[in-house]
Image 1 (cartoon, one colour):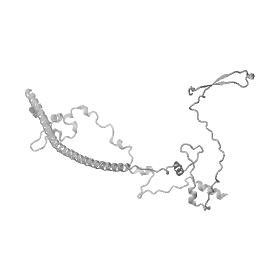
Image 2 (cartoon, helix red, strand yellow):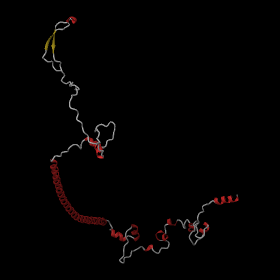
Image 3 (cartoon, one colour):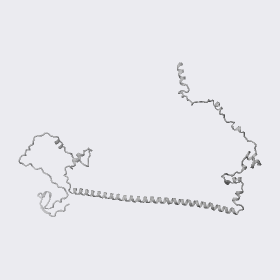
Image 4 (cartoon, helix red, strand yellow):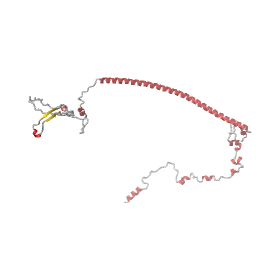
Length: 315
């Protein structure tokens, strides 16, 4: 509320009918009514009386013309379409919505700096393309150089591997020869030790081998002596024997002559063997001189069809 005004005025008031109300002289203080500054205005339009003046000017119209299709299309006013509300759920065409938007009525002004921007972008694109091309060429050169180095390293490794393979083969061959020499050296050492041990005994191995009989040599598994002509020497007692073990070493031994004859007769072994001539007679077959011929199986093996047909004919 606005503060009260200080310009107050005092009025002396004498009522005319003081006998009715019993009033006397009064002093009235006049102050301006406080006004709210935020209160809206309370002006009211008043209808003024029509002024008398010149008559209305008559508007002249041209004669009516037929409405063309272009005029009809021009008079199609686009209704107001909201981009946020559609309570009725109407389907509005996109052209109508764009026409109601008023975009076509705006005058678009393009800044001249857009041309400078496009030129700058085009120049930057050309420079970047050249830089990319240069980088790709440098990358290809480095890649070819790296491939050449790898190829040279592989060639060097291949040559070293081939030389190392030859060296390894030579070393393996030398190791094998060394092992063979060690084996031969060990065998000869063992033979010398054996011969030394045999010399200490009463008889040497050569003497014992010469004194041994051929049968003993065969029993011991030693090699038979070979004559100068290349023929083996056998014990003559093993030849020209008629009864085998009954003569020579086994003549006096009764262990080998417990039975005079065999337990089973040789003819009993073929007692249950079938004869070649009696096989066909027992099986009931005959010899044939051509391949086996097969007969086609009948569709009615039990003869039911013939039986039924015979019954039908009797009826």
